[in-house]
Image 1 (cartoon, one colour):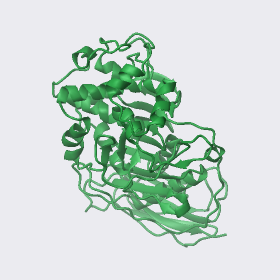
Image 2: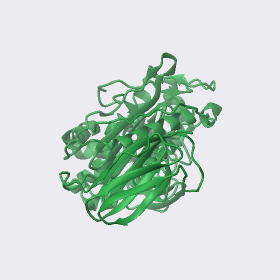
Image 3: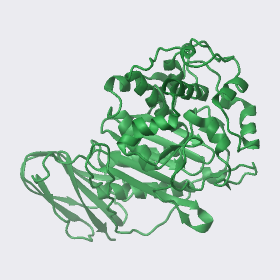
Image 4: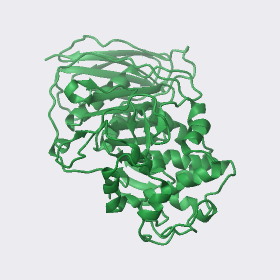
Length: 497
């Protein structure tokens, strides 16, 4: 485990052909649409998650995990007006066919930094401290830690403080005595070298800064960080399956997680390996364990300004420019990245046996989370889920302001099954912006049949089984979605050849 130069987090990287090769997957077409019930969300009534989108997300997750030969994953998406989709794929213990459950806890690594930064911003809003406070106002002096460094600089990684996880002796010490409980003072005393640059002169990721952030929280509140997090932030929002390991008592089952702990080239089940040493060291920089659903709810709560004020959120998302593709900036405990031409906020993380990714799409106030029970590219899997969402609903799926008013009706296509063509019929009761799209079960756009303003009346559109490139598509199941203004309805059809 080390600080990866690309992702800048607690992570582990090894050259394992099984993790990098893609497997071809052949499967029968199953005509199935899964109806997912949403969970209660902060200040919202329970909604029904769009079943077509839920099916597309689950299919994409399954294909992504199997295609990358990964052990397993838990994923979630929050979409305003619908609630939460939760999906799992793969196994906790493959040899026992022990599948992953949505309730299982995963280590989220450096996504923890978003929570730590949010606590400090909450204290700033309460007038307890300031982003411009210097470290000497809150913690003792330590060699190699410039006491004039500000809270803003440690949260933005512009402090210049040496990253203790880069010290080659540190992880050897953690592995040699996994039960040892590390104190932040011991880390600052024993595992730092000279600063990388003067405060504010440049950017370099430092887990040490977030260890210091935890020390400041304790000094400012007189509380354990976990106590403040639960009582002041997560508890009031009914986010109850999130824990700071080494401070909290975990409630729930921790998924089995896999890591080459003995260096023989094979992944080992380290579920029973003591977590005290590693997680006490990671602490406020990477020690949270949570369900994917909780992290998706957190992403929306944090970045939609539902918890912090817009002023505080603006501070958090004032990014230092970066060029670590696809990462383009770092704010206060928050990364900025770009996928499919869209800007996303969030963070990723990695710690022994876990990799995680949180994206927040501000245009739709939607959040996406993927957590793996091994070290791998969780960002890539999460990006595929986000891409599936974008392909299905480029401007988001929202509930009509007045559901009692029916603006349109989508009929079943006919004939169905069909060959070589079928007719899709719908009725508009109002003049509206209309989009009629065909998707495959991977969530990929196959054909856009209508995308224009239309007048009221009954419409009939024929589809001849040809995609947007003018090529005939394969036999199988396809989904058709009619979006009228901000509402969507769907149908399913089968092409036989």
